[in-house]
Length: 516
Image (cartoon, rainbow, N blue to C red; front, side, top):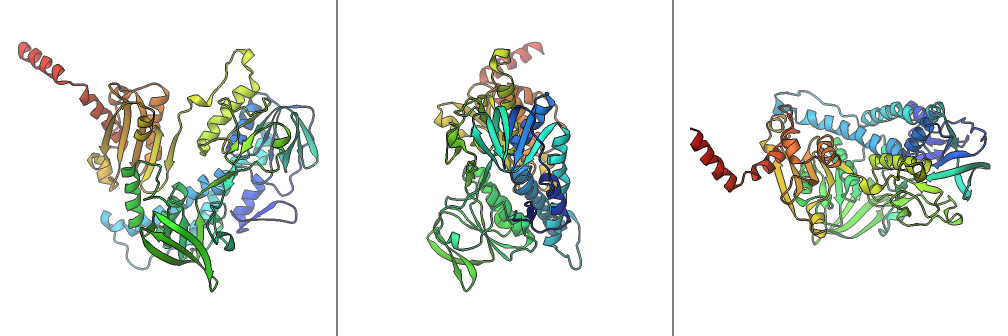
């Protein structure tokens, strides 16, 4: 999101249309007046992204006196430059592709089909503004939270300064998140480039888009913009795309984005950026072939830097490094009065992880152990995640490589979508469901789904893991037919078949022969 500072010191989000003006009026109101502090707060939270918002809302609902500080936009990355805008454009790109592929479903599209990238982006901004009401300063004030718009800085282990106003606290929480970081690519600092924080400000479709990094952000944006009509060049240092996923899962996504027109330059070496007659060029070696590619825009989709600057952490005994703030399993920093949650301290930089960590902070910061409630811990979190390409990849728990590294023997069951009736009928039969169980048991230790709605489907495995339910429970649960989620039950059925040993089969054969 491209921003500049307006005369009234509120951010001017570009483009400055009615939707972005509505967004700003909610998450950084131009004429906002900070409240006057009255006494010590139970909890002061710096940062109003997901972790900060959830912490503030729950604490206030419990009756605690809470202050929430945000220097930029409430809602953080998720609302403003992450989950919300990206899924908005992914949906638009999917609609464009549906029209393009409509003939296979018997729909003849005749005449000129007009594509309007500006309208697709305006739709995203409109919906983002609508959602922003939930994260607004006005709503949180009504929830009983004192909302301060400004720069928060620790001045002691019990006080925070917000642009000259001192807030006293019993406990504090750091929820300042992380921001896009640029890798050390020669020449990158000599050109204007995009990150997830600026690409959603575009109103015109770049004819040629270079994308650096084939992780989740890079793949989602590359595929979407290719579907919009950009010529997209996706550069990745490792082989293929989504290198952290199972190879056969990422290969399905790779084939899909290649069909959409993305040019993949993987195993990229010696990447450098330069300007030639005012035009950006990406020079890279991919699989031994040298490429020099002129592009109109470059998106950098790798690297995150924690927002630790300007907080005064070094003066209050809170340790931090390039990965973020150091916390223990209770999310307590090296200063026992101060906690942290979300991207500022977590290796799992997801909105839903920040939400879960906020609830851990609430229990540990507001309800000390002597009250008998016990400590909440990050050790017990079971965290799923998804990449929203077409098809999506979703995962929870351990990969097989993780089980091997930990010496855990597993049985693995994989069922393809091309044997699931609904997936065939939907024309979405590329993919599979895979589940790992401890060897000789039905205890789930990890699962991966590749499917159009994998992000929606992974929760069944996640719930089973959280509840201590195994594949036997899934196999005996009635699933509606026909759905793509039936693939999950089919993995459980595959496990169940292995429980019928040859010895059991021989015994049953004798039993049935005797009973005839």
